[in-house]
Length: 186
Ligand SMILES: [Cu+2]
View 1 (tube, rainbow, N blue to C red):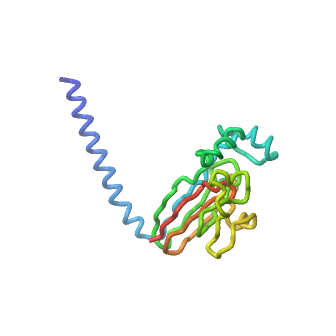
View 2: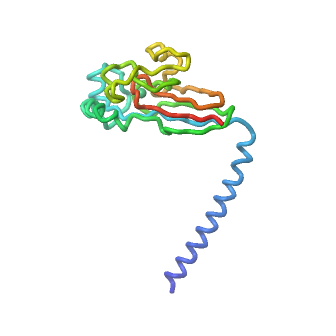
View 3: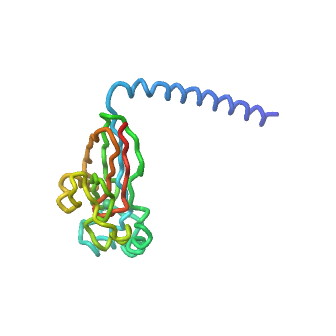
């Protein structure tokens, strides 16, 4: 009997919790209506500091991640390392909203807008995307190292803020071309 009582009390507590959560959910749109929102986009990796810096140079990786260069290289044959990605591969925001792009990995990434996804600037990494033609930006030019200045996001940097116009936008990393996301602005 007492265990049944405990369960009933728990159910009541859950119901109260759900009611509280529902009121929070109801309150959210009112707050949202106040103005543009910022959606955080996270660039992620798991570089192993020891092997990455031994291979690419001191300071290349600043995170003690779990993926060694050997594993990363092997993963390139399988579409790229799954530990290298953008947190949302698909996102929908409202016109006027912004994307706040941060790097929570250990190496430099870019959040570069492209009209056609494709290969990046490091030829050996492009096997991950079957050596597709180089990614093309909305202005018709190919992605290049020059894009680091406008779309590069280093680990620990304050991040990049982007306010895309209405429509569908594609972004990828020019180093790790399987790091991609599609953002729809409605
Ligand atoms: Cu990257």
